[in-house]
Image (tube, rainbow, N blue to C red; front, side, top):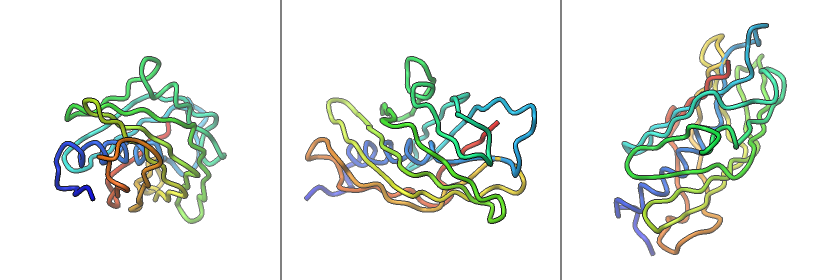
Length: 170
């Protein structure tokens, strides 16, 4: 059994989950006419940070929408992680919004993280995000992503703590 105490492998699993969490946030109570259907994301997990800006969304919140992974992943997007980790999103996550409750929900996030020659793929479902006041910034609730493929060296699951990620729809 692999112990998460192994720093390189723990970082890889965490980075994959970090990206997953990053994809799932949102920002204001109602979309303004000037909203440009873009999404910025950030997540910090175990000292590693993954970010992107200006990814394309299919609509503005509170309308249900999807986020286009090709506008996050390189070469079309600007996803970057520190700590020698690379990550890519394998799906176009769908978001629904409940403005009365101040929440958003992501159906599925499917992410691959890589460090050196080790690649790990993780999936998380039904991720819940809490809106920050009346903005369209959303912060994640804790969730766990399960390994769906990759090296036997990859942890079987990785968890992102509450508040470890945020998304801003603009």
